[in-house]
Image 1 (cartoon, rainbow, N blue to C red):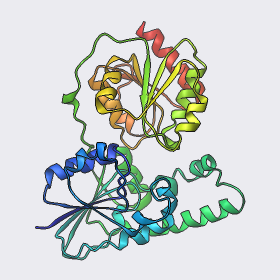
Image 2: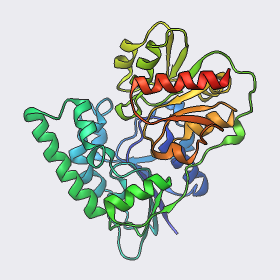
Image 3: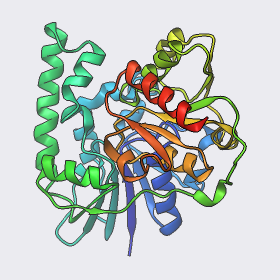
Image 4: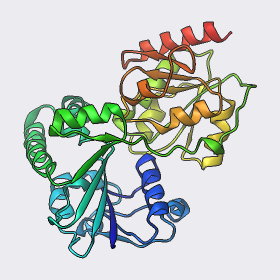
Length: 334
């Protein structure tokens, strides 16, 4: 059988890429497809030297820096891939990958990290955060998102099987697509982490710096707690904005290797996590080190963090709520 694996895009190494890496381990003979491939050479190990077949968007102006800006063209681009010679196609979708075109004699399995967040339940949050909620720019953006929603719902009938990466996402799939999804959690290599009992006096957070991850709220919260130290690992389009908010007790390290991340997760007093995440691999990696998690109490974190056992929750995405949760954690930990 000929097998193909298709992902929305490859621009960095994150949770979706870890899923892709494991799929390549399972199906080393599979061909790989993605709208873009801009992963730097030093982060490509998960691809196992496999060629990535890309779309026409790869060569569009400024695509490397502003790849999300081509969202209106992504449905057309994903439909241009020809999978007619394959028996099995596995899509790993956070945006448009599940919208590929397949025939009745082909098996299409869609692993859904999430339906398109900024087109569905996070639409209004996205519009406000990007300043696209008013004026002519807002009208155009809303029209584009309306078109994306129609396309996304129409193409949800295409996969023969849908798999959600958490129960939270399975519920979102049911709400948006009216389809039942199996749940298979993403791969988390807990064996590469060692229990560290002796913790140091700092907190850590790590993430791609995009709006829904809410790293800015964590940085704002620690600016209100000058006696507590925070280490921030990761980069992305929000990096400069977040750096401008950082107080002297907050240190931004930018992108770091897995070894540096592992070291900080092991030694930290706690891992702070403010996103309404689909699943969230990093909280599990922190717990594998014996590091408690202070997390927003919604989304995938509710399936991986145990209240007052492996962590604690806050229930409002605000700097004040994070301050309160960290203070409460400090009292119980001391």
